Length: 303
Image 1: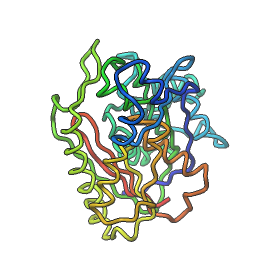
Image 2 (image 1 turned 90 degrees about the vertical axis):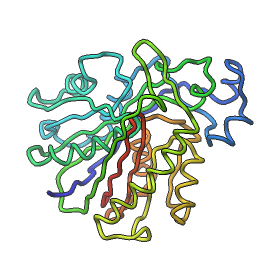
Image 3 (image 1 turned 45 degrees about the horizontal axis):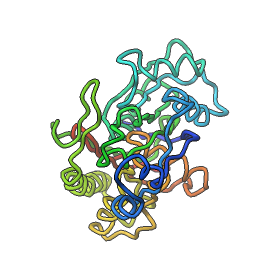
């Protein structure tokens, strides 16, 4: 199969910011406790906006300057759609004014959702000119704000990528290990997490995913310009680059500003890096994620 090209990116976060000091007024915690353990200083939380606004504004940036009639599919990676149905993707079709011929659906791979969605987009590009891939989450709606083990970690946000078929290098790998004990959310309940178990899982599968796509591409770690890891926890990301013996400069992090935004975290990083001019055509990057399910996966992309 052909590869993919990321044509453009966009991202959006809520205006309202919740700092660690703000959280200390709500629950028994402090910046001195949160930051050393997570690398998080603040997170953006929906007040006036909702997940549909975040997804829409991120998508607008990603599709700027292109003919909307050429968008043949919309995939939204999310685990926080407030509706059982319709999908956020269907609502984006309407709000963005896309063709009614568009193939629109949501995908729930939890925090691995965006890397899963990119892999799905690749297959849809055999028939479509462009696929719009969005990662969007309003995790604040799933949290128990009295549970300091979870409420300190998560934030709201969205990131989007417009992709097209290309002869550029593209490799992906996905996996899942059925588990509803380590990280889960029940209907009409809150998100629950066993932090130590998640850490062990993440530090095991992230290097494995990176090695899998490198092996498929016959490349080495030194061939990769950037590793974009799901922004769950700075300690997890540090563990990965130390284990792989890769320079930390190759691991872009924004968890300090946004916290864990689940399926939105990787496209948020891509959007920020693209906006700053850090991503140059021809660069090789690996996006790698893990999440509830338990899910994991990686995309090796030639920018």
